[in-house]
Amino acid sequence: DIQMTQSPSTLSASVGDRVTITCRASQSLTSWLAWYQQKPGKAPKLLISDASSLESGVPSRFSGSGSGTEFTLTISSLQPDDFATYYCQQYKIYWTFGQGTKVEIK
Amino acid sequence: EVQLVESGGGLVQPGGSLRLSCAASEFTFSTYSMNWVRQAPGKGLEWLSYISGSSSTIYYADSVKGRFTISRDNAKNSLYLQMNSLRAEDTAVYYCARDTFFSTGGGPFDPWGQGTLVTVSS
Image 1 (tube, chains in turn green, blue):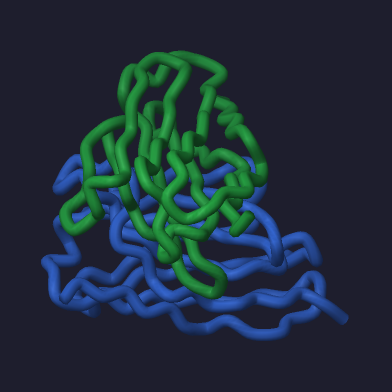
Image 2 (cartoon, rainbow over the protein chains, first blue to last red; image 1 turned 135 degrees about the horizontal axis):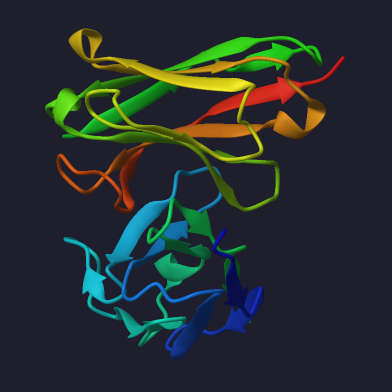
């Protein structure tokens, strides 16, 4: 099984901050990695696929990078609507999610 | 707009059974693989099961293998999850989600339904 490890688990930040979340895989994914945003009581929303491809309608302040076993999600300037929990997901072999990173208001 | 709507959740006793449904609309259901994912209260996301468009390929997570059965009825644009031998640790919100890889499957998930809550308790 492929294990996914996100860091940090919680991140406190202010509006306008640059935020980076890291996701590490237990084996190489090449670029088969996605990022999701989830708000309380809502379903997850796909933000980025194939490690760096922004989904239609997702603001350009979100970006993804990385390949192999280490990946990052960056929010260039945090907005009020961005306070949420973010999950990475590998789809190289079956599907596995990271444990999540909660972005909260500082 | 592509839409997925789950139903069938509720309170069930340990050892009991429940069948979840997911109604799909505004896309050609038979051409997409589908998945079930759950989220225990206050916890992260756990992929449970995958079914290809033709139902020819099915996968399960180890945590539900032998207890849960995924199926679909393309004529009814519906996905199902039959859950047997339920345990307290199966308490979660259950989501259906469409695979983004048209025809082949194996991609990330979009969109997701709103979820249905299953509570296993005596």
